[in-house]
Amino acid sequence: MFNKVILIGNLTRDVELRYLPSGQALAKCGIATNRRYKDASGMQKDETMFIDFTVWGRSAEVANQYLRKGSRVLLEGRLTLEQWTDQNGQKRSRHSITVENLKMLDRKGEGPADGEGYGAAQGGGYAEPAPQAGYGQSQGAGYGQPQQGYGAPAQPQQPAQPKPAPELPEIDIDEEDIPF
Image (cartoon, rainbow, N blue to C red; front, side, top):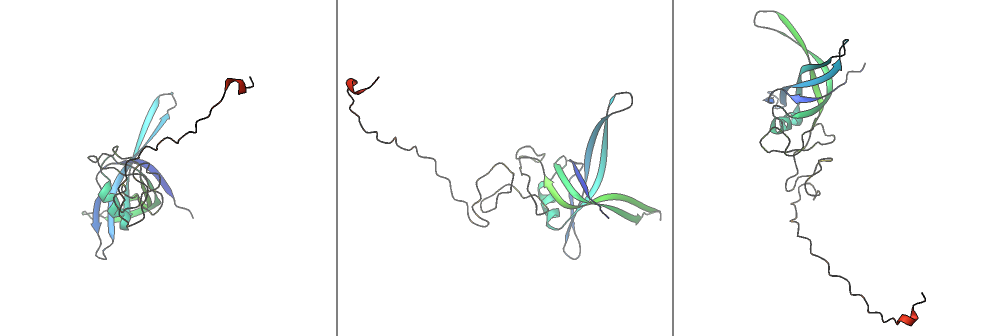
């Protein structure tokens, strides 16, 4: 059997981070996705879906640190059925997404957080923050200094010095020597 879900949308609320007694991080949040279509009469319609999702481990901690309500994300995961009994003894259930890979799609300066930026990362199950001194640059971020090596301090970049013009030899040509 195959159970794979891929969604792109905006967070409907801030990430709620909790830790299990085992010490493992668990984050819960919701995403809103839109679909635009034409109905039978040719009118343009919008359909919005609200889906809850769960993120585990280090991905949960990173999501809590860098994502805010309105952040644009790509989620890859599997559909899960959650079942519980409410306060009145009624059995309840709902579908949610258990995230296996989370990618932040906002670029630096575009996110809803006050000026905090981050780029989309590839792999690893979570997106890495914008490069800092000694922190590796994520692929596809499109900004920052080249990677100096993980854990190595960033080297200050020296301003470019203009190169002196090369010395050209002086050529003595008589007009009679030119064939045309």
